[in-house]
Amino acid sequence: MRHTDVPVGGARASSTSTESVTEERSVRSSADADITAAFARGDDGSLHEVYTRWSPLIYTVARRSVRNDDDAADVTQAVFVAAWQGRQGFDPDSGSLPGWLLGITRRKIADHYRAAGRAPEPHEELPEEAALDPAVETVIDKVLLADEIERLGEPQRRILELCFYQDMTHAQVASLLDLPLGTVKSHVRRSLGRLRDRLEVDGVRR
Amino acid sequence: MSGVESQVEGRGGHMDEETIALLALGESVAGIESDHLQTCALCQAKVDQMRAIVGTARSISDEDHPMTPPDGLWGRITAEIESDGPVVPQGRAPRGARMGWFALAAAVGLLVGSVGTFVATDQRNPAPTIAQAELEPLPGQQARGVAQVRETPNGPVLMVDVADLPATDGYFEVWMLTPEADSMVSVGVLGDGAVSEFPLPSGMDMEVFPVVDISVEQFDGDVTHSADSVVRGALAT
Image (cartoon, rainbow over all chains, first blue to last red; front, top):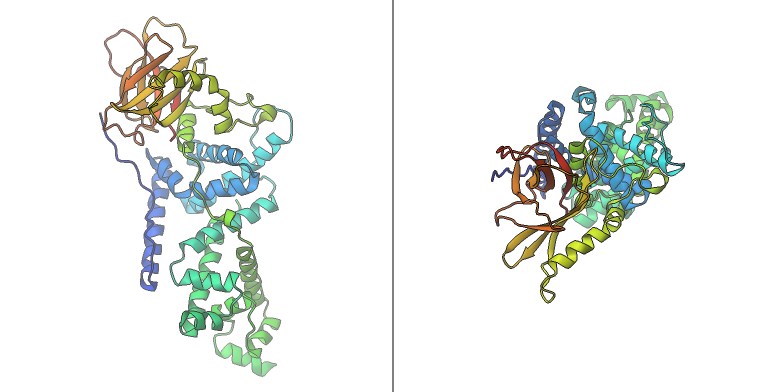
């Protein structure tokens, strides 16, 4: 019997210190770049790595858009099958792989709505320029932001959550965490920058 | 006003990112900064953009956090890619929607039942099912069935129950494949009975070889897979 190593996903080392954040982030983006390059080449096994890395994102967007776990799994299945079959249409120079996967997801969700709303008939692909569904766009933004917030190291994540969900001012956060005000401000600035970048890289509609 | 402008300009012209962050989060800033905002469309646009992101982030609920898809979905994806068509054929479910995993499992409940009675030979200690696969027909085939891996006192056993196999001059062989079908292990030859049972080597890794496949083989002495598969399905725990 041949035994093959199960492919593993991207590096997920969680960072707990400020110093390791940059390093962790670059390890992550370098792992993402490796997965993306393997997929673009059509390497055997690359789809599994893509699935391991990005299926939670796609599945959650689907789940929040179709409101039924079985249908969300169907949409996710359709996205990854279409991604593999259409992998030659992916150009790593023109955008991120998760951004491209989300583009397929938008179309499959639209397919799902259309299929559910009328009598059975042969499967039809929507045209490339599918009408944007504002509800789906909001879902995508929320899931991307939730994902990016989860990936913030500490204390950045705690700081941002206190600002976002406890409505604390920077000064209150600094006092609570016993950190210099300037440190809190620069963490918030960088964290918000990361959130903005994530939406611009992966959330862009195409 | 020109004095204020020059003060702001003197510090690099536009607002710094920290000030934009403060404003986006709803905090107040010094008069100089807010005056600049009144007159600078660029900074106002940056604040608006960041404010929208903060607003969206504040509306995130627990359900928006990425969660792992159900076990077995990866197997469905590879099975669909391998079979070059949807694993669950279109049109069987009402209103054009494809049946989900659980609905499908219920639809083949009869087959599961017959496997169940077979393996439950020891009613006091029924062998627990570790994983199960719905065996779906490949294009042009009618056969359909179920495979289960059960943990018995003698080690893991693959139970296969498949109906409507095509007529053949050869025989049916059971395989476990990688999702990419680039590597496989022969598990055994399908018997004539309703259910066949194949002991699995204790080192058999179902994560490496999750796809159960039944092929038509000829009595030609060639031990490799004929590439003529009848049914296939991915084991899910």
